[in-house]
Image (cartoon, rainbow, N blue to C red; front, side):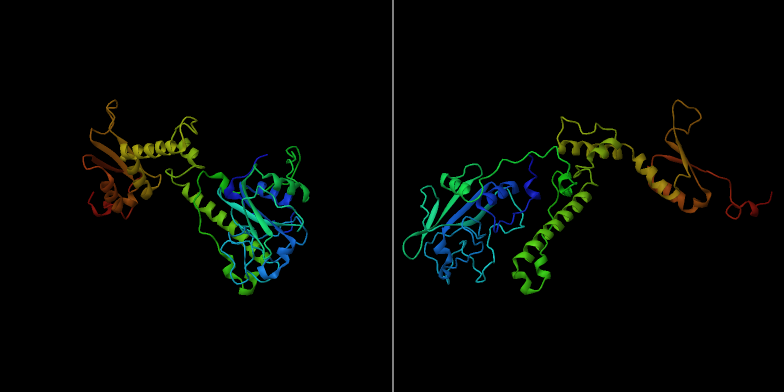
Amino acid sequence: MSVAPLSTMVAPDLAGLSLGGAYQAALQAGFGHFQITAFRETAMADPTYLWVEVAPATGYVTQTTSPGSAGMITATTPPEGSFYTSDPEPGVPDQSPAPGSSITGTSILSFVYKVPDTGTVPSDFTTSGRGPTGLVAWWTYSFSAGSVPASLQVDLSNYNGAPLTPVDVSGQAFLAVAQDPLLDFTAPPTAEPVDMLADVPEFERRSYEIETVLRVVGNEINRLESARLAVAQNFFPGTADVLLPRFEELLGLPVNPPTIDLNGRRRIVVAYLNRLKGEGRGLDWIASISALCGTNWRYEEHNPADPNSPAAYSVNVNIPEILAQVGWNLVRDVTPAHLVINPGYVEGWLVGIALLDDTDL
């Protein structure tokens, strides 16, 4: 079962999920590192310690962050990084990373679940803390995906659902899923993050639902802006990836050669363009005159095999007579100084421009 790149993923909303379901959702989202904390019912229900319950059922995720090192936590001195919510309003989550935030390769997902007071304290936890009576009130497991501690594995099974084997749905027909635009590019630019919370009233910024929705929408805007920058980046062969085959095709180079990496292909295209420009000032020369005359002009160079061609170190140039006043100045300016220009016109004299009517015949 394929998993999308981490750059396209966001942290799932785990509030209210079973412990097993939350862990499985985190794996599917791309997390590889975890800090999962178990804490007792009585300790969580004690408002003195800011253990504000979000999900009511034992074994379900309460969506608060991992605990600090202190065992005794008071309402006025919550430790930095503690799993106890710093907001006095029940229902306000502290999951880390917050739902809807982007996942990186080093992201550690932290959340907690509730266990009965009668539950046995395991021996394979990473750290723990005691309540006012000296009882171990909570304990934390720190581990990587695929190495679930034995005691936590038991809880995963007891609390509604150990991780399930993904079902193969490759043969099923589903509606098309929108393609992340960044997946087409090798290394797309990173756009500035969008802070949409700044655009809503202050009281709405405390709403978990509004914060999560706006974060997800902001992430999508960020991806689209990054894709726009990547498209612009592809118009230059030195930074192109998706459009690089088109440059190779136009220049007559091998397209997508399997033995040359992306940077090597870019260097070849840029070098070939520079060589063409350097070898044939003629290309720039033709482009300059065509910018003035369009296609209505012609030229002929010296050809040693053709006695009727212009003499060596000279070139015949024919432009429209109506452009004569500015045209010859341009031709002289863009033509190398060692070449003699034999001027001519692509059409006959125009009455009023030639001086035939002023000459005695």
